[in-house]
Length: 311
Image (cartoon, rainbow, N blue to C red; front, side, top):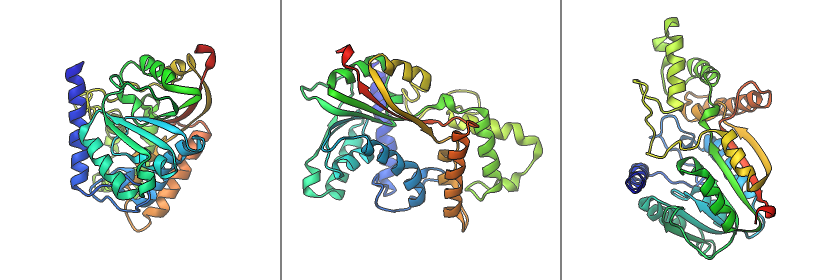
């Protein structure tokens, strides 16, 4: 396990360093284009607002005033920056030493002196993290699916929370991505201008293959049917039913909803003069598909309160 954890850290060191070399900044208020990202919501300011800022806002909306927060797997600091910027006290931990190094740099660059003091970063795995502190909120912002033994992780969160403390979870749940999701994405990529010139290779005989490729793309399955995740522990948890069942043993769920039935695989890939208009069209379609139970959303948004009966 120790070797795998080292590989996990190394994988994210490489990922973040590649992005930093391209002048990437994980701050949702900069309104910068990241043209090196071909199909990622971080590419356009408008898609950042819809796909990323909406998620950071969900976390902020569920933090009480001046909360003491622990963010597990803080990465480059997207969520931690938002928390500190809104006067919450934040401890951000991550296994990637380079992520922490860059996160500290971003805090100095983008926060005023007062709010900068509200962030403390630590390069450590959650398993090894020890503290006498108690927190009002523990946050998983696209990180819980990288942690093994979810039951043990949640138990530790329970013990680190103050009375009436809450966990806030914003996570991809890839098991919700079905072939039907891939079909709708295929149709949109085919008929809207995207980074892929699909019209050039139009062939009705390729329907099945093309749709299956999109399904595999989301599940990180390569051409020879092998899983090819971005790190050793990626996708350790991908089933929302399993997650909810484990959370209910220690917490009372207060809010839960889903987004991203299709949009996270399309927004950053749109092109053409009407790409902003199409970003909003896709966002509205995504909500319609989920609200009418046509497709499952693949990003869970969940808030759960510590159940004092289990104390």
